[in-house]
Length: 222
Image (cartoon, rainbow, N blue to C red; front, side):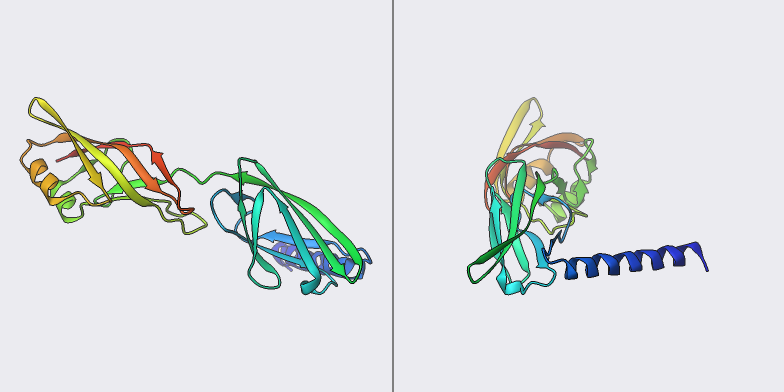
């Protein structure tokens, strides 16, 4: 038999032993799993599943510190870290009649969301890339997103400014929303290329609804 098959068999047997041990243990232990990762992200509704072997799910109760809990069904919850704490504690217990049984306390690290990625006209704005003006005119949108993240996180661009040089003058255009207005595109079309454009004063709205300032970026228009 191949080594991989042996390893798989051992893992399956170990899993069965753990389940049976928990089931027959009079002081049943809770099983808590964070559905996405073993951390909680600030500002997001992190899904978790909670089950206690041998205990009716309807009897299981949770208390979280520095977090807001919302029960979806018997075993599924969402948990949103609150405040500035870097750790969330989760107490799991069950209540039957006048008896309360503790099933464990669990601690999870709280992490901020990764820095989002900026794109304009479909081009990622890192290391001052070059954007063709024809592409900018066809897709004049600034997007802020988190690609390849375990959650689907959306950011809305509230406002930003474009700073560029027209002849000897520096021009700063204030823009609301993500789209570059046609009036600004017309001005950019008349400038000798290539020229540099800097995005500044960027304000985005995160998944929790709060608005915050974000770092800008620069690119060259050709």
